[in-house]
Amino acid sequence: MGIVPFPQRIEPQVGFDRQELTRILDLYGRMVAAGHWRDYAMDLGRDAAIFSAFRRTAERPEVRIEKRPALRHKQGMWSLIGENGFVLKRGQELGPVLAPVERRLLKLVEE
Image (cartoon, rainbow, N blue to C red; front, side, top):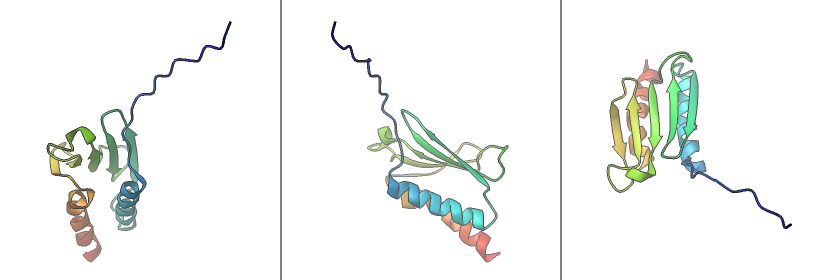
C-alpha cells in the first residue's frame, strides 16, 4: 500500500500586504496617541480583509477599512465604513479612502 496524501482544501483568503498594513497601523497608532481609538480587530476572510478600529473595546467599531478585491473593477476594492454601517468613502487606492480619518486626526490634534 502506498502513501496517500491528505486532501488539501486551502480556501483562498484575502489579506493586507505589508505596505497596506503599515499604512493602516500607522494611522491607528496616531489615533491612539491622540486618545481617540483604543482597540482594533482584523478579520481576514474569503471575500474581504477588514480592519476595525474601536473607541472602546465593548462597542461597535467606529470605522471599518475593508479590502474587497472582487470590487476592484467596479467601485474600487477599498471602503471606509462608519459606525452606523454607511460607506463613507470608496476607491481604488487606500490613501484617498483613509483621507476622512486623516482629516479627523488633524482636528483632534489641533484641539
